[in-house]
Length: 503
Image 1 (cartoon, rainbow, N blue to C red):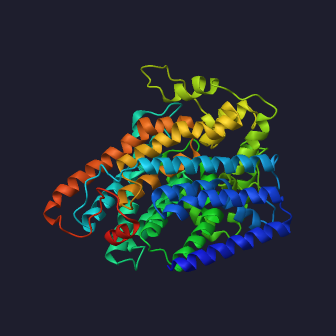
Image 2 (cartoon, rainbow, N blue to C red):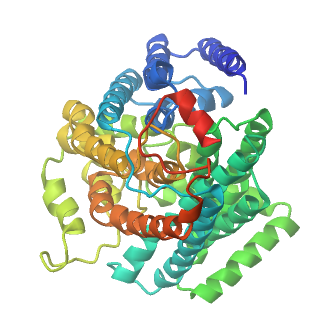
Image 3 (cartoon, rainbow, N blue to C red):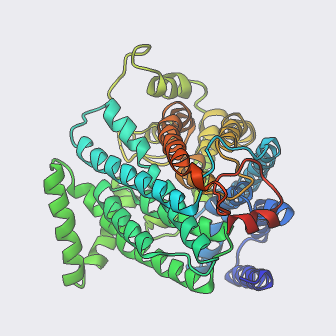
């Protein structure tokens, strides 16, 4: 797509939204902070162009203040509506986006453009590796679906390993999209095989009750298309349709199935999935009923009565609007002291320490639930496995200033550096796109407990099989190493050279 078209369209959209917010009566300071966070979050893209570091910074901004700017406008609500401390919360969010941008630029500076993955001889070999990785990831998902019904308390090693291996599905998406774009010289983005993979993934997301699996798969395809300059207006229209289908149909279905799955075997639950999906097609009013149930559960059954940014119990939109969660947590810290290091000693360390060092305690609740109990965000004893991102955890544990400025630096910076060493984020390759697609959700949503588990378990379990597949396939196709469509990158080059070599 023409760069001028993108810039003009984006500028026009932002101006329209800002004017609409002013007309809705938004607090001028809050609106100014929202626009400031946008400028900061998109600064790396305007400064150095598109690479996976700058895209991650933009994704982080979008999850905190970017997406809600547009969502609140569509709801005809000013940005400060339904927030307890709107100015302070948007100020902290803007500061946080600035900290993350600094982390991203620092990690990018230390990325020397190398990759541990062996370059592929051809896009055909890349596609073969991707298909096998996808099959392994889907198989691991099936194991998780069965094993999760046998677990009472702590997960066993099979469950932990299989859960990490599901991320290999994203390597399948990255490789298939790369092959499609490269072979069509940028004219096509979605192949019949890719469409089939997406269909299987949506079914798996319903079976596992993991909506992020479907969302991340679409994000992976979009990122590949974006990095390889293959996104067309029709793809944006398709993305809008998929977004509507996901929020209106897939999300309420997934939450209903989360209730239905209790005390059912894998076969019984699979039958329930098929039956419920069939009923949504044959019973016109069922989806509306499920949407009402979703709103009720998100607001009342989880006990989260202080966190509803849109006034309708919108589960998926609240999940994507972390400025509202930050507002709720910040407001609680104004009347309660920060939790302190007790959170680390009582929860984070025991949850991540090996069982031979620490006696494991069965916990039928998430770390995010415990944090919410401690600060009075939800009723003690309620278990909803709430998301509690790293910076917001920092606010609850150490207070606003240290939580927003120091806590992300201590954990997010090392993880980004590690990912860049595994496969450079400076250049577009299937392996780097796989890493960002597989782990950006954890980087944005996980607390310190998730970060530590990601470094010690998730990352090695996921990356080592992918590396072994690359090594085996590269040696299998060594005779064709002169093929111009080599996937791996030994060293990042200029953006123009990257684009020409990638396609």
